[in-house]
Length: 618
Image (cartoon, rainbow, N blue to C red; front, side, top):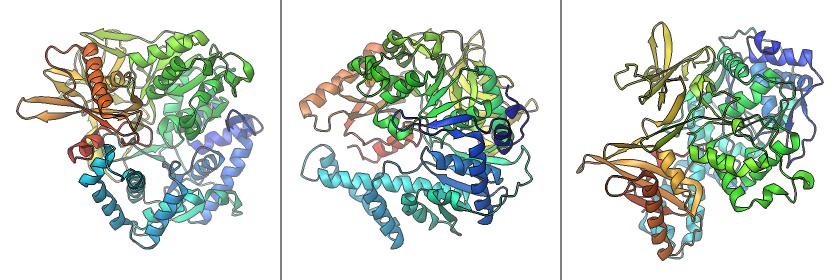
């Protein structure tokens, strides 16, 4: 384990260790296309972060004050994060409005300046619930251009509402953002009793105030990491320097870094896997890292795979949706991977360099892993490299890792199949309990609870929510995750879904993620854009299973829609073979872009259920 991690109490100390030992060593490359450009070096990063820290102190930031950071992947977010930590401040990273057009941002600025944001938001929501809007969604009438504008405005207001909630919860003293994001910050600030100072990213290094090293220890809060909100309102997870470094030590011991290791990642830096895993973790462990913008990945996922090839990366990280998407792309257009016209310099794709391809952040499915291995095995990808992992923001990041030298394991029982996410990291404990809080024997499903050194201090400003998920037992603090899972006889952990989201029909449990994957195997369905949820049927005493599915073609004619619904139902029934009837009681086809996702790309099942009940998809 690197001395920078073992000998440090705070993140600032880790950076100081790195800059003193390896000032000129390149750590991070920010890719534009596949051009690595000038690397971020440890010594320069410390100097630039100290300038930001001096600026923050000049603005009145004291240890424990919050600094909201709304920046995309790039040098400025690294300067802002490490500058905040050196100043003793609490970093609050949040999702920037990267996919919002300049025109919409200007409209938001005008609404904010004239204090008409709230009534405009109300009017937009009201218009989209009118019968005419429902007809436009079905392709009827001449209002589709207006519908597109209204839906764009509604997405913007929902994003702003999230930022208002984050600002009201965290109460930042300073907001750091791109200048173009000013309207969002100004609108959110109007809901605060005291407006924070605004610093544009272009001004971060213009400060000349001297930096004063604050007195700080490992118990100080380093980060407020807001949850994705996939199961409700976003909550601010409070993490100390000590908790974050404990997690890095634990997953560092599992990964066992090698001298030739390199990491390629497209994960955003405002969520735990991208921030703590592939940014803080690689800096602390001294692993060269190549970062792709999440926006660039979304536009062209192929560059992720070619970046692994070009830089001979040994470690990469993704999620189930990304792995499934790449497998589908390779199956449909293998030539893009054999010899790409832009990437690879005419070479054939070679993934034999990969020793670890982590798959986490959302439920891992057998189908996605097998499809990825099937398509990319011909390009040298070893089955042993596919590594399903488990973690969550409330534990800083990582909780369980598989054996990184062995193929992933699958548990099959009564037609169900689940992927093992391995065993607890060193220093962590995992148990499975029933609804009464009693431990269950191996092989039985229940709620996953965790104890370990990186457990959060709580949810910021919400002791009631904290008390619901953290309980004392056996002299330890245990986190009740809300995840359903089981531990087999050999101690391997399997995550089957979220307890709140599991659908029970006719005495059988269905995991929405697995149903969604089957639905998305049907031609005509937009990959990654279906949501399954249950509705209680008082008459039958069981649940009805509803699937809201985005079409690939927004102009799909009615006869093809009917055939697609039949094919979706048939495909799901072929896999699950229900004893009687059909698994899906209702399939609702909607236009592309109709479904919302969280800032980390997770499906918002409870939000989709609410919108369905309000008639938005009718």
